[in-house]
Length: 179
Image (cartoon, rainbow, N blue to C red; front, side, top):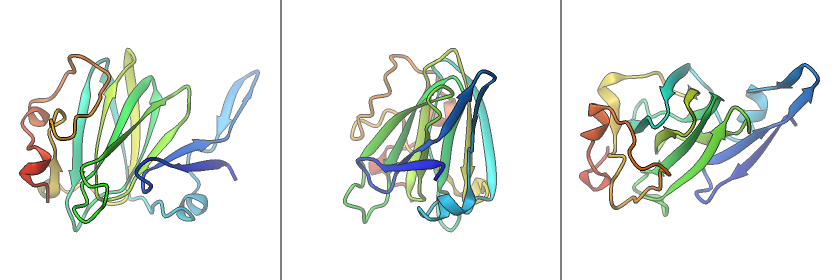
């Protein structure tokens, strides 16, 4: 096996640790292996997205509504982020709960968020390059979100004054009813 899969406090969210093989030239790792990920209910993927952001940029909390709800496999290719998953499945015993992990180019960790989770991250390094594979194509009319500073969620972003887009500043609170 080239990966370790560890459930977090919300069991459907998985922290994935790839085997990394360093040598005098640098390192090598497998970043994704369809069959191994499928054994853990991850995928299939239809689109890859990449974002580049400066220190302090907070993106999120975003999700896509059914019928194109997206599962996301998130990795940080350059720099470091605090990655957050919020359970928005109304029937779930962990509805409204969140988990967070530090993902970085240095630690090689990945986070799997199945459909039914809102996703966001904040950049902790000078810059960050984030890649995420998704299980459904981007569909603008199904694009949704939750306010990053929702007091009922009380997410610890580990940053004082994040840089937020006007779109993200005006997202509704979770109690405002994500679909």
